[in-house]
Length: 572
Image (cartoon, rainbow, N blue to C red; front, side):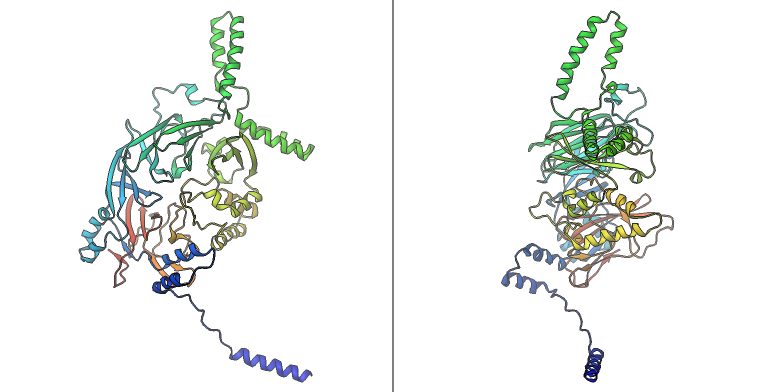
């Protein structure tokens, strides 16, 4: 019996030596075969949209025109429907509205085999037809070219302008400090006058605006504004107030409410009625006019001794949680009570039309006095606008909030509210995006001075997420393409510019689909020059714009689909 077992083992060893692994069978990449399969073979239930999007692997940007001679403007981004494109004028006082002519608009020009210099000078006007130039600001105000929000119907765009507060004449004290939560401005966080404008993309008309004087609103990358459907939220860091507006179908701002000192609309009316009765009784007892003037100063909101409504709801929620934990929880609450009172609103975002995610931090963090603000302790508060209740509070080391962020990332991003079927590669719906997130987390855990808590802090530092900061282009969909996220990602932020083209591989086959040349090929920059590149993808067409910045120089490249036979990659 033992001999027979040894014979069987020898037979298996011989078969293992002779066995070879066959090549992996790749899915058919022929677009004609795909069209035939879509026509004849119905898709598996639940996969119809995915099979439709797989055609993007066959129709990719394969042509790059480098160093395009654009108009004198700062290019911004496409509208959600892809028909319009906005840019800011060079003096940052006007916006230019262009109509996109489609990814194949330059086919006739390319087939004519014109000189490359002439091509670079004409191709911008071929792709983009200027419709309107709308003057927005005056009297020294400048538009922020990193701030713009589109409505879901692609009818209106919201832009912001700002101007520094002059030193003379000196601002009135109570114009700067309008409530007892107002922060103290400094050199790194100076006061400015802000205006929020809304422009009709169809007519080029400047429809409405709202002004905020002696304030501080972080406009870069839409940090201080959030648009959810037709509801606009604006965070005033200086006055610690959140302004809620409704955008009508005519492009007008309607004041809904302000959240900060008061939460309900009639809170101020009730307080003024109460303070009016108290003031009347005091005036009857006063005989000296100077005392009356001094009393009028004490009635200013900055001199309030009571905690404002929003902070009071936060403290109430924390006290109830501490009370439920018992005496030990109450001791911790009273120990950190002054820290809770010193917290100020730093960032915010809308989770839906009724809920806000607000990030609180120390005043030194909020006013940019700290070099590494994301390393400082902070609180995340979920607030219901209608009921004016605090739903939940998390620390920036909360593993529960991190798990919620990973599993419901799309609800935090709100990247494609205008589409009935959103396609966003996030950790909550895409295996490859979750692998990238875990790889980033493991890198921080294993790094020097890292660890698990530090990794949680770094990941939660992404919250709150700015509005409309993620691209919806299918060419950045991680379920369709594989690329190095070090050089390009869905997050619309400048990235380091490499010396080699960015390669995109098909996720199902691993084959190279296309390349993107972010800068001038075969051109070496100065060793000390810091090169950054920002990508702007069309929402669904094979068209992308890359703007490379080297110190003060800008190089604009167009990447699009061209039906060429010589497989030419770029034009110099």
